[in-house]
Image (cartoon, rainbow, N blue to C red; front, top):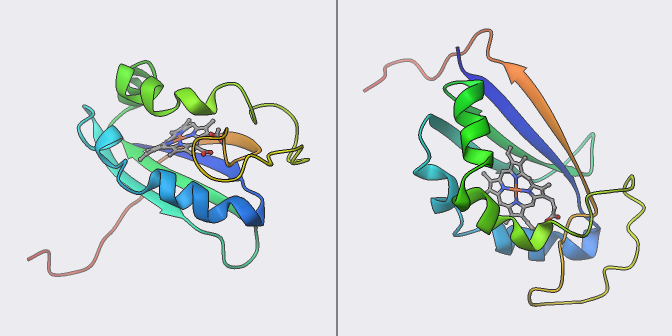
Length: 124
Ligand code: HEM
C-alpha cells in the first residue's frame, strides 16, 4: 500500500517566491527515486498559510531510503541548519536573494497510509 508524506513548510510572505524558485527544476531530485509515485508543491490559498510538499511512495521503506540518499541530502543541504527549530516565529531571514539560508522558517512531516485512491475515469 502506498504512503503519503507531506512536508508542511512555514514560509514568510516575502520568501514565497524564493521558495517556489528553489523548488522549480528540482523535480529530478525525487523523480528518479525507487518507489517514488507522486510529488506536488502546494501553495496555500485558503484555510492555511503553510505550503505543503506532497509526496507519495510505494512503501515506507522507499521513502526512508530516499531521505537517506545523496539526492535528498544534497538537495536539502542548504536547509539543514536554519529553520528546523522553533514554531514559525520567523526570526531574521533577511538575507534576500541568492542562497541565503532556507526560505522556510519551520517544517513538519505528516505521514499517511493511502486507504483509497481514484483518478479520472477513462484511463486512456
Ligand atoms: C516529504 C519529503 C520531504 C521532506 C521530509 C523534506 C524536508 C525539507 C525541509 C525540512 C525543508 C525546510 C527547510 C528549509 O526551509 O529549507 C525543505 C525545504 C525544501 N525542500 Fe524538501 N523535503 C521533502 C520533499 C522535497 C521534494 C520532493 C523536493 C523537490 C522536488 C524538495 C525540495 C526542497 C526545496 C527546494 C526546499 C526549499 C529550501 C528553502 O527553504 O529555501 N523537498 N524540505
